[in-house]
Amino acid sequence: MAAETTTTAQQIGPRTPGTVYDNASGVFRVLEVVTDPSEARRVLKRNAARFAVLVEDLHTAGRHYTGAVWTGSDRVLKAVAA
Image (cartoon, rainbow, N blue to C red; front, side, top):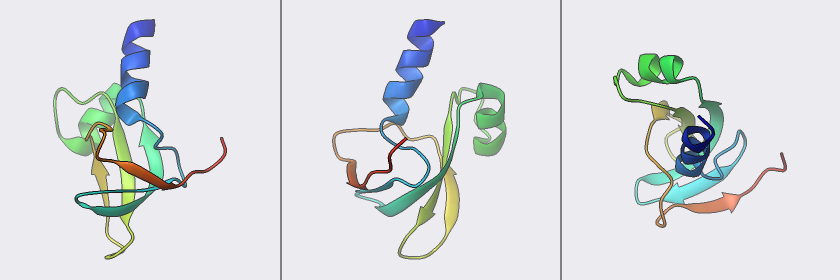
C-alpha cells in the first residue's frame, strides 16, 4: 500500500491547490487534488483512475479534472507552500 501511495504522489507531482503550472496544453492553476480512487474514477469517468486534479485554465477560465501524470514537460510557474 505504501508503494502505491508513493507512486500516486509521484504521478501527481508538485500539483497542490494553488500551484500554477504549464505544459503543452496551457497554463493551469490547481484547485483541488482528489486522491480517493473511487472519487477519482467518478469524476474522470475512468475505471482505472487513482487520482484526479481539478484545474483552471488561466487563459480561458475553464475548469476541468485531469488524470494526466506529471512529466518532464510540465513546469511549475508558481509554487504554494504546503
